[in-house]
Every structure is written in structure tokens, then in C-alpha cells.
Amino acid sequence: MNIRKNLLDLEHQKYLQFYTTTIIIIFTYFIGVGISLLTKQIKPDQIIALLIISIIIIGIATAFLYSFNSNIKRISEEIKKLI
Image (tube, rainbow, N blue to C red; front, top):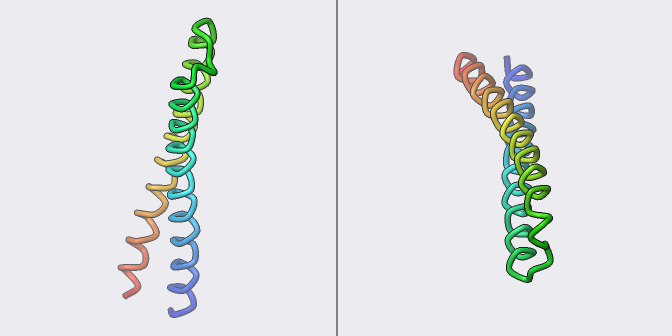
């Protein structure tokens, strides 16, 4: 039982690390886009391309966050059952 709980704890930590890393990547992306817009590194004709790329990145990150969050909840419930 302790071995199973320890393995679940390790798996929980792994998904939690993935979750927080994804959030950090999203914020870093928005900060980079914001700085590039403020310093006028992105020209007006590039805005549409930036929006398309942003939608793709946010969509992928959201899918990952949803998956990681559901795995974290599932593992937490399994750990509670073992205790």
C-alpha cells in the first residue's frame, strides 16, 4: 500500500509540475507579445498572423491544462482512497 501511494505521489507531482510549467509558458508568451507590441516590433500587417499563432498556442496550452488537471484530480482521489 505504501509503495502504491508513493508511486501515486510521484505521478501527482509530475502532473503538477507539467501544469505549473504550462502556466509559466503561457504567461511568458503573453509578456513577450506585450513587450513586442509596446516596442512596435510587430508591424500592423503582422497582427493577424500573431492572432492566429496566439489562438493555436492558447488552444494547445488549454488542452494540456485540462488534461493535466483531470489527471491531478484523478490521482488525488486515488490517494485519498488509499489513506
